[in-house]
Image (cartoon, rainbow, N blue to C red; front, side):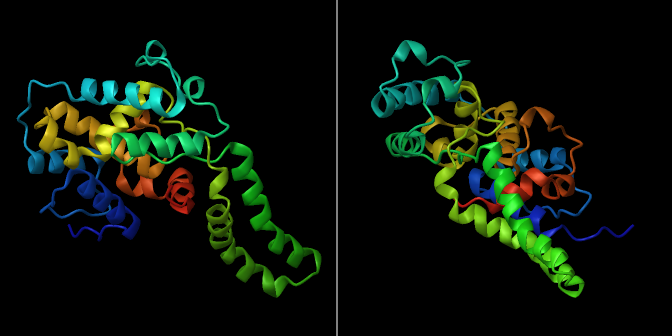
Length: 243
């Protein structure tokens, strides 16, 4: 049976995973590709050998020091299940986030908009369509409706300074450590040594979660890449500009 070519957004998602792990994947993907197949391909490319050094512990201790330097957070307060909201106040969070990124010398996951900002930007993008309906310009409604996603993306782009919320998949110090390891896998492998297979698979999920906005707890081997890139969380994430 002939398989359909992979969706362009799914291809971009695969490219992001490849970039994080610093590998090239020789296998072909299609619209039927699931997350488990992507994990298997990355494991095959990276290898299954693991070092005796705990990668998570190394990142955790560096993060603890960086939080102390950037936000004056006491070391005793930085524990795996501490909530990031409690450690880094919303006011000045973007500045602190950038300082932590510089201190660690790694890529941090992007901050998100608060819910009200998402709703407001969506409502503003609806205004031209509402105006067209109110004025009785029915012939103009379809073009305006087609422009709505682009208007929403443009509004979110210029509203990027309002991004000061931790996304759903990034609530605790433990979440942050795992996501940092995933997003910087290739860069850290030279220093920390090869990762175990379970760490590779967990990192793939974290990269996918950061790219799509989907909670990693909801991801499983059967999750379709096509379903991920057609979700509202992914489309909203695509609209965000990078920090």
